[in-house]
Image (tube, rainbow, N blue to C red):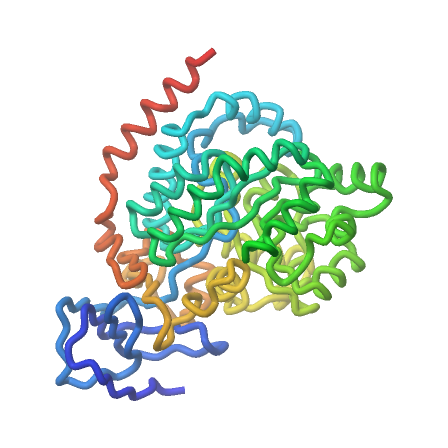
Length: 441
């Protein structure tokens, strides 16, 4: 298809990106050369822009690919502190026994510092929106507010009903205030951690609270075989079926991992319209397994990508997740054609927007949507010759190829330089906090 020729009715705009190879993610295999016009944070033209149009700022994107901003649909952002630490573990549950004691030492300022570091890494990797599940959620909101990125912030729940009600009482109004101040960049989700850390009453409460307050529900599910076996031993069914009994599956639910799901589980996820977040690096590192993504997609389940926390990955790089997701799919199904590169790129953009309830604002490059855009510099040896741009983005591109990151029309990074975060200060602060954390009794 050729580029659309669109007349721009705004004769002067905030930002014009010209001469880009545009992958709008609106149709499989569709790309074209053209321009993107941005006004008040919104895409107002895409295609061929009239020469009479003027812009306050012009970015010449010759030799670059313009993509929708990538979406990290499951992470624990400020676990950046635990990167490259406690890596020699037997499995997820062994790893958690090492992580939980030091997490108990964290305070608000630690999470603020870890979040700023994680956001810096995310922006540099082309991520414009992430979904977080962690402690001291207001601290992460503060970091999001200051840096210009988007986020679904999870009000995390652990333990029994009384503990969960206390967490809501302590945090809900403050989180709602951050949401109002963010001009739609922040949304608040309810995030019961997992069936092995939360009671059934907590999950029922989370489901009702989410429905009453227009939230999405974000939880871990069927990550390990042990989790599934334990759930069957206690409740007589799989975690997915148990979540359904607790009224926690639905179109506004997104489930992290879903590695150990059988046909009945997958059919149930599809029937309820829930979303699955694939975390291939974390699943491999902790030997949890490879999720049956192709079989979920065959059932029309919406699938997105996540990095999980930097402690179990050890990065926040969605480009790595795309490449690994494609490789694992081919290996698991013994079929290199089980998924196309476009399908993987879809999970990192459109699929993420669907899972986080943001498809009306991002995930694709279209007129009327937020200007969440990244520019990939293809003038590098490892991307030459480009041939198929979709394959290039999934198999060959790296996060260091991201030249420019834009969220809601605001340039957050240009020529690899962060514009809303002092990189050195973020690094130095994180090092100082980690040193202090490790010395606490």
